[in-house]
Image 1 (cartoon, rainbow, N blue to C red):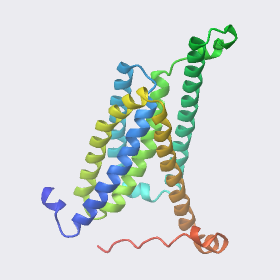
Image 2 (cartoon, helix red, strand yellow):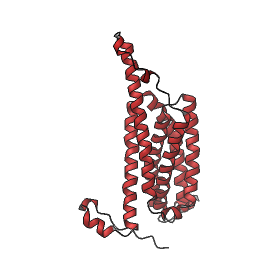
Image 3 (cartoon, helix red, strand yellow):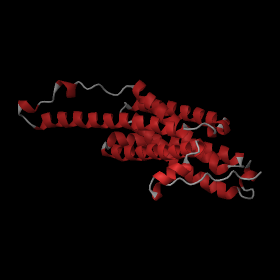
Image 4 (cartoon, rainbow, N blue to C red):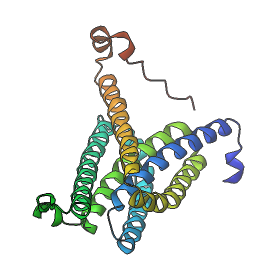
Length: 242
């Protein structure tokens, strides 16, 4: 396997896979860390560990059926929609946490009884392990799909690089997610930056997915004639010769 990483043409594919993993595994780590940030430390570690195990399973499973996945029209678009739902849930939680903390802080600093926090704010239920893990699973599902398809496209005829890329993405995510979760738990404002990153990935998946749908259905000429030039869809690159 090591020799095949340095075979002719493999180095360019290896570089592409490294760049893809740095970006997508980092995004996945942000999503997992953001989902786990609202949990107590022990549950946080457990959620991240289980999320990593789920990501490993999904990446291996998707890698085994890459050819079939590439033939499913609209799969990437659907993955982007799922990730968009995760973004919405995360945004709601960030807003609820901010409202709760502001209400409590305002009551502590002000002696005026009228500024006491509402019963709803004080009684806000903490995030449950189940809710966090569901968000992590959906984020893993969407981002594992995106990661495997992107790496498979870059690796092409180099299965050793495909395997290396998947292992690297899992290692990067495992190292980064725990640190990111602790950082987000300490500095809530960073959560909005993380949310923006995950939102960008979701929208990018939907954009790429909708282009694939238009191409596969044969509507590219009509689409390009209707849309502005900067939104034109380019023809799909031909498959590499064997």
